[in-house]
Image 1 (cartoon, rainbow, N blue to C red):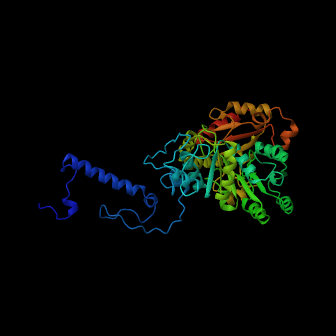
Image 2 (cartoon, rainbow, N blue to C red; image 1 turned 45 degrees about the vertical axis):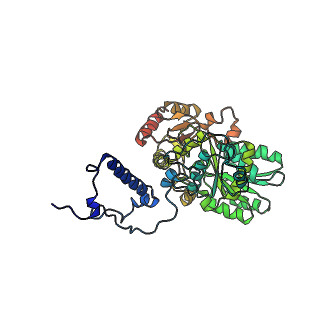
Length: 465
């Protein structure tokens, strides 16, 4: 049978061509496929209607799906932002895995090249304490997830908090308003250290909006700072309302969003000026690296970055790489943790040996309406009060087989602690009561283990009391 005159059919197949031609054809085909696969539209279109193949093999239908938002999904951003999908990627590489640039200093091609860098006409890295290509990839990835103009990654979450406060609140003239429920070490730094720098400090209850209004009316508030949700009682604050109140009086708003992760809550999109995280938790996600991050506008992050240079809070490129790798699975991890924790919260609030459950995902939670308005999930941490005393709860903790007895949260492994023992052992009853810590309180950080096995483990441990 005569061959078709179509040039596509007449081309020699790999089996008919010479070995050299076979390799050339295969390389060309692989290259063509790779280019198609790397297009962001192709990644998205694979899941959209109207992009499936027609009856004629090899013919791709034109996309008929409605227009998409310019912002890609968090799932895709967690994998590709700052790397393949980075507009100004810090890395010029064809490696799928971001390389670890371990050099502490970077060289310039000429004196003119150096001057262009100093005058801001050329982007370059100079010294590791000021910036690093691997770290920049991580910062761009977090910025994409937070919908921020800029992000600074620091050596720890506490470093992020301290750098933010020192940069944005002027000594001798600043005024910080914070809440009695914010992170204990941040609360201590604000109350003990900032006050000695001539900075005015006011503590209010988390959702006492009337007191906040009264304090703001003084006209001298520089910054409002709090956690949302709080630890360990998972109280939530109306970020949008607080931002509106503060901005009317010229005050900035900083939210520590560690207990939700960027997957569940984006404070910058609802009015906050700064969001901080202990990146050690959900962002890194594997209990193997310490870090913090601060996201916001270019102007604010530049001020904080300058302070952090002096504090020496740079993160190592190796740690940044670990977090980049961990971030790629954050959407999957957090989705599992959201699901497991909500199911467990519903089960425990109906268990006869549980007196109270703290979780904003529960309809019964006094903070549920706030969480529902600004969060897409409530995270993997739950606190609950067991119908027992200090030693009875210790027996419950010790009877658990899956979780580790440990501090921290947000990783793949489940962790459990009794705050009266872990954080307040040796403290007075007055101090425990002031912080809402009862002897029978348990904080459980769920990992990614199978729900049914975690459930059975908790139920069998409750039988021990």
